[in-house]
Image (cartoon, rainbow, N blue to C red):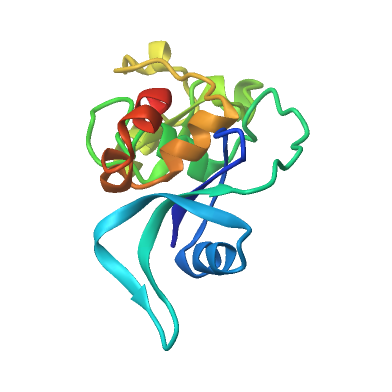
Length: 168
């Protein structure tokens, strides 16, 4: 599970990594712990450090500018917080607002999270044709938003105030 947020030296979010990778980065002095779990520690023969939630790289990493987050089914489910856009229940599938059969594509603005029942009921129709209004409109997250949304809600709530404000 990727549960540690990696910040660039300039404090901009870069990615999420596993706990093991985060510990290796800290132990090799490539990163410092910015925010740690209050109760948990990683211990070894010569090591005792808090479990990192957020780490910051010591050296700036130049990242190619990315205007938009890459689309993915998982990304749509995460963006919509696994809630069906038609009924609000738990979503397990992705539905195309304009069906692919009618020329709709795999884009952030054309896909929403949906429960299997509503996805099947809507079929190859638009929400208007099916009489199923959307509870919320799809939106395109920024790359940083997409990364922060990928963290579990419990982990996002434990982020430092300055970082949680940037994620909101």
